[in-house]
Image (cartoon, rainbow, N blue to C red; front, side, top):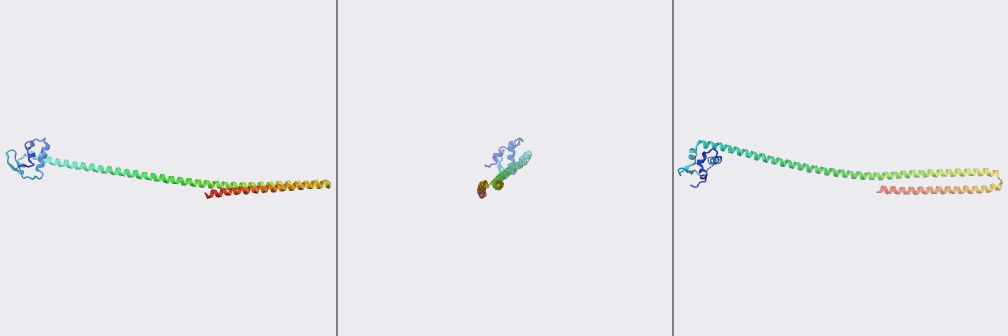
Length: 233
């Protein structure tokens, strides 16, 4: 007859062995799946038989085992599907966790880089401000020093003028008192000498005052130049 079921039905007499699970499963597949041929050849008598007749003539014990194994096979398939689903879910969860961890790491790295850049920028700005403030402080100190120096020079000039004026007045008073007790010739000579000394002392005072004023002006000009250059940087 040439049917694919013959290769399975050749093992018909061995199907009674309960430990032969694989052949029972094959028999189970014969009776519980669609069969393209209605008749198969009976190997015992050589005649074709209907598949339903063959099913009836099989021992009930084998049929019961076939039903049982079919149910067990179905359960095994369900368990396998469940295991596959669990494995897939676990793999998906692991992949999601890895992606989340990578994203978090990238975000943390970006945040750290941004914070470092901001800190560096702020530090540079602070340094620049400190340098500017330091320059302004130096300029302020220079101005204060200039004012103090000018004040000291003015006070020195005033003291010199007062001292020279008092010495000249004392010399003139002493010359006048001595001239009254002496003779007229000596008075005229001493008067001329005192007048020349007083004129020389006055000229020296004028020279000192002029020198001091020139020095003060030069110092002030230098300080002004320093201030202008420092503020224009």
